[in-house]
Length: 92
Image (cartoon, rainbow, N blue to C red; front, side):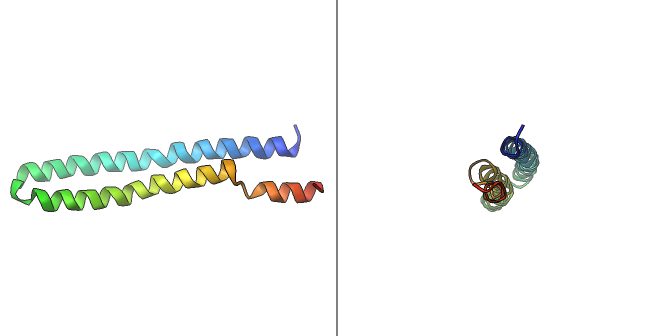
């Protein structure tokens, strides 16, 4: 297998690993945050609007981690910075 195939294979593997592991943490965090928010609303129904607003802001922050992992994954697949280095070193 030539170097181009190795770079492609490593990029696809790293991309899958990035999006796979990078989505587990935010999913668990969002589930825990939602469970705690529902528990807080059940205990204090008068504060439901404040809790909900804070929950949505927190969920957006947690979800940004998964979005960053998705962006890194897409860069590895479609705009890999190693392709130019590989092309220059092979003389192409």
